[in-house]
Image (cartoon, rainbow, N blue to C red; front, side):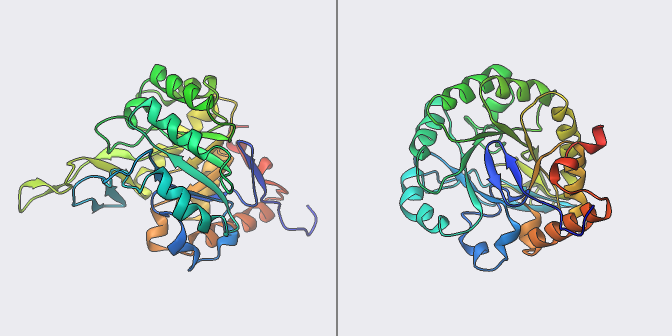
Length: 307
């Protein structure tokens, strides 16, 4: 390898990214608070918090609970709705350098389609992430992402109303994730995001009641990384579309593992809560690793453990 720095540029599902490091939907909110405090040059894209057709109030509190090596959340996808996002958040987000991917949520196929159609052609939106895997909803959400037929229905319906690059976010709360992945690919997904949070709960032993207001929540953080990594490995062998790996990444080494398993890019989530410098640290660590191993571009790293 020459003395040139490794090329971190990637094409993720048709979206040209300057780095393979993304901010995952949820912890990064709509980006405003973080963008004022971090070096955003390390991020190839920001995936904003889920957007529904109409405003959602979310779940009753308490909504967060720490666990060993993880975090349980039961936010319930609280958000201001599509129109408020287009009017208030998108104009600000367009001024930032990373690409913008919007996480789309719904309780029915029609709601997913309404949001996707409303974002199609919106200036500043580079792609969509179809969230069919949230474990904190009583209707919609994960119900679509645990059944291949339902996955195919919602993805194919959304595909008809938008030309934007379409990622589909998969749930780990399934028996065989490859069945869901293949259904999403056959329905027209351009890429897959995996994985969302694992379903879990915690109990307050003093009150003798579940700590979360919704009883169950989604577990994220380092505790889920081995599960997420396994599912990326399985999915990489089952589909031909690119993968965005996520789940417990808190270091460059974690990110590299996901890429070696077959992910073309990675997303940082819970780790951003306690380390706002994490994107830069992952970027620098990735450059050091690639230089040490004589890798000139990300493509040489992706799936290398499988070869």
